[in-house]
Length: 547
Ligand code: SAH
Figure: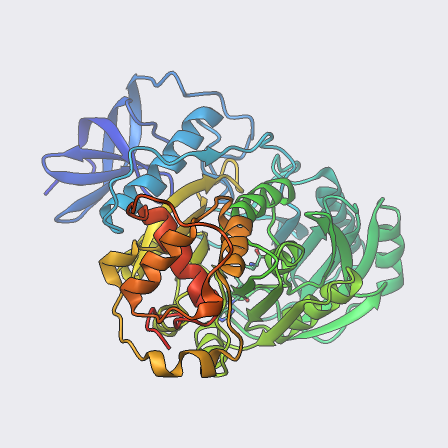
């Protein structure tokens, strides 16, 4: 065990999920903030446990070429960002490496590299800020919590927020100080103003201000509104009533004091309505890139039904609607579902349906009611997919699962679980939606494993035609495959797959094309496409059994 307060020499080899450096000293993992991989440091041990310790750099013996001067004056104190001490190149490297390490270690993959969609800018990207309010020497101020505490660190100009956000914060603090509005104190539970919440549409420039109060109203609202109206883009002011103790920022009750109570913004060419509680990615431009990657990976055709679990206000669902036959979104927050329905209407999208409920339970019910999506998108919170959701995915057996993740560790766990249900990881791509902060997003594509590996075939050819109701020809199958996969399949290959499945050949089932003279074996890729087409036309069930 390392000794507290003692100084050791160490080399930083890795990073924690929170972005701290990791060194190994005498077999013990030591977590060191503000350290960069490759650096040799002298470190003072501040906390020592049997297998791990925490320390602070007292001297940099060998500096990383990626070390830079911090642009943000409060970076060392403020818990908002993690990486102002390193260049962006190293930040991207460590993020993609984290995704790769999780997928390999937890997910059982053997990936050599995971590409990352880097952000073109690290500045002013965050379209939402939640400033806690505090008092120092009788004056109110707002900022962000110091890491691991509820001490509020003031930052006159936060680099990752747009200027308008700080302008709103300053106007509100002026109002609070002028009218002596009381500030909430966590220890006593007394005082009115708790948080200043600002959301700004990156494209629309519209600003929603939400003040979280430990009470039912605010004094001198008119004076506040007139100050806010001086800020370009200000659209609406909402009061959120939160009289409960604890860390939850927003309360359950919202009162609109000025404007419509929501703002609008454009994402992926669509218009979205956003209220204070709606989930909306904080980095607009990177969210567009992430969603585009998800849409590309989904490989949707006009015949497909897409199920978007954890859909929020329907951003991904609606962005996919144009390419799909039908899209279905599921989300647990009723207000977000209302927003999603409204978003479909305001964009004239008619092939979208939204359900409010738990993703796993709703998916199981949809499956029971006969919904068999071709593609399922999941974008869960950090805890990842529930057992119900995994079970529903297993039963629905979609062709593809596009997994948008905000936590590589739970993504990797779920990839391992989905592999037990006949899926395999096809691609994984990291995306940096939070420059200068440790979080990383990933979009992963899972597809059904090669047919021979998992298909359990029970043949019952008697029911075939009656169940289907219509005889599909090889031309239907070929057209479907060409549209969806972009390649042609020969009738002989369809014949081979049918034969293997024991599906009786109907005379209408022939097409006009001649068979190849020499019998050749259907390639695996085409076999999978044919099976998919047979499933699509109801000639075999989604789980591979013939009907
Ligand atoms: N795909 C959306 C939202 C992703 S955030 C987007 O990119 O904008 C995750 C969403 O899952 C949130 O809207 C959250 O409210 C919702 N959620 C959390 N737990 C859920 C559950 N058990 N079932 C359904 N939705 C859930």
